[in-house]
Length: 253
Image (cartoon, rainbow, N blue to C red):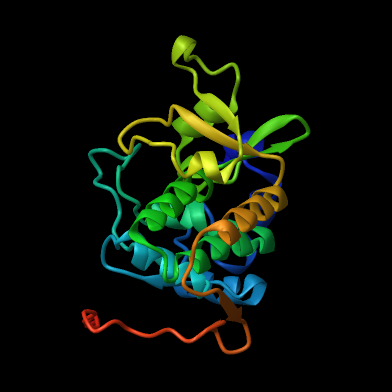
């Protein structure tokens, strides 16, 4: 991936990856440990990685982002299909996601989606999950007039990274459509999970992506607004919340 990252990854990713080679054991001859990565991210952006055994629901996953927690899978793709996996594996998590969480704008952007998910309706959770997919997973940002990847699905796939970022990539009439980043449109844009994306969203910068996502989240109907306290890793809400009689508390281990 390194040659392709040099040409197609955003500068924030390249900077973070370079630092993580020094501090987190990234390299061709080493296997980085998630605890080292999590400790490093905490120092940089107050984000941390939490291992999980499998996939979570969109609501549970986004809930973690509100607390600056990224739930990371532990398994690795089957050796018979090393080039692609429809489910996120440890290669996707550590090569695609982890370096981006060392960037403050990206970390704040991800948390915006998470905070908006707290108390959101199922319909709005779906919209936020679509926004997450088209940004954190497959987002592009512009650098010096060229599209660069910041989405983990691109940064962990040499085939799709080139497909999305290189105008000379062989695609013919199957070349992807590049749209300006607009969370309102992204929230309604369907996507495949077993093939390259037909549509990508291009932000002017990570700062631009964050600001537009924040404005979109502020316009969503919510029973309360949540604020994160970075000192004690808690979320405070701006009004009392009462549970209806029909609600049954969810039991969690």
